[in-house]
Amino acid sequence: MDYYKQIDGKKLDMKLIQLAEEAVKGSGDGRISKNDAEQILAAVVDGDVYTETERETVDYLHKNFHWTDAAWSWFNEQLKIWSSEFQKLIRMTPAEVTKQHFAVEDVLRKPEERIAREHDLKAATTETYQDHDDIAIIVRLANGRRVEVISNFIELAGSFVELRGGFDIPVKAIEKVEI
Image 1 (cartoon, rainbow, N blue to C red):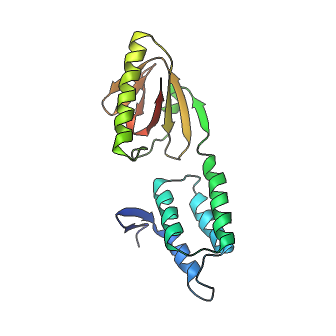
Image 2 (cartoon, rainbow, N blue to C red; image 1 turned 45 degrees about the vertical axis):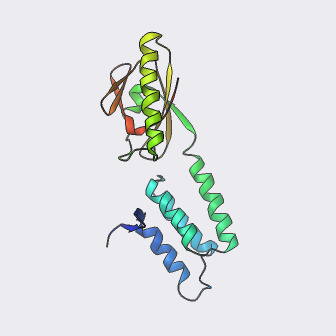
């Protein structure tokens, strides 16, 4: 059996879907209970990574399964608390961030966001050439954590950005550039 399932053109986590399907069939009322929600949340947080596939799957579960009010409230609150940890910025040096694992897929979903990132990187490159100002780059790691890296030298090198000291970051891992 595959670990993923394609539904409506989206790759979803089969384990989470199976947990939800098991929860709604059988002797209950056909809704996901708080106990079921606890099992689903445990499966989401098991690897301490909140992937795009898991986000899409949780969204699918919310839209396509019936939940008790208590389960719905509890699950969303716990997920919000857990995922908010991924929104906190961790400051790293260019040397530290290049030792991290980066996501395989682009962290920006929309084409217009990618175009804006490319524009901001070009502007940051010009800024560091002219004035050597510090530029903040927000990077999303493979585990979903967000990192802030400060550098006064940025150069675009194909699908990578080179920072002071020769440290490279994949462009697809960059969420935001602050000039």
